[in-house]
Length: 304
Image (cartoon, rainbow, N blue to C red; front, side, top):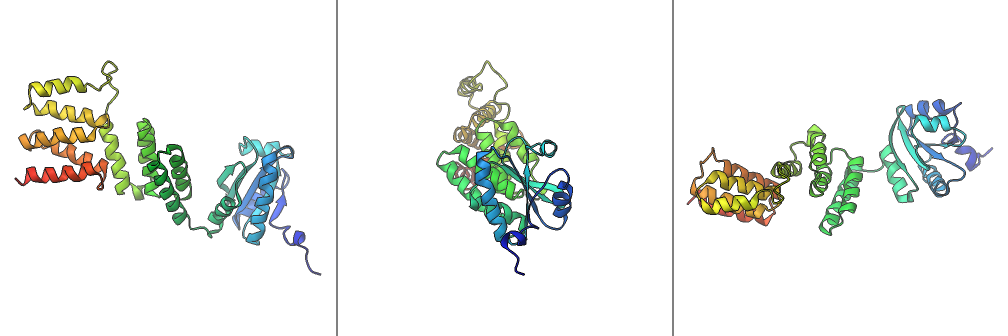
């Protein structure tokens, strides 16, 4: 007897409740990835997602198992897994939830989601493509779109240094230096020394205590400029001004004062001006005009 399509799929598209959830999900995920679709009869997006999920699962022909859980009939399971809304989808492997999403998704995204579980999707390449799109969004001024793509890239490949750096950069540029610092601190050890990570770390070091003095909204720059004009040879004040300028985002202005300081006395305070200048160059990146022109001027001073 030839099995019907429904009969042949009975092992990898099933419904579960409290009586068989352990067997159908936890135990089954020891041998193959299991996707759990939490749904409800009254849920409109569920009626869009579930057929799409079933279609993609059928195409996998047994590589992945789909388990349907009606939250109205199985509130205990939903509460244990902290399902806040439907549809919610979790992917289980080796008895543990390892990935998931909420809401309806297009078929292309479902294929990527399942491909990560089966190994059919090259997560490194997919993450790199998302990072490239995120960078384009940043260039176009779409910070929200960039942040979303950077975050999605990280979800696919937590060791994508450009994604970590990009998301940290978005936080820093949005004024949230603490979150940016936390992202860098929590980055995998394997990418801590990556050039993009180092660049954002250098930018963070320039921010400093920009908001320490509430009575000086200009970060004390006007007062420091007056002091430098009154005593151009006071290199300590000039360095302080350069740091204030850099912390407010005026790296070009900071570089100008640092170069003047180096020209006057390159060894002052254990070459503090030159060291800070190199930090700015690192934060700017090798392709920055500020860094390119600044390095030329620095070389001219050092080798004069």
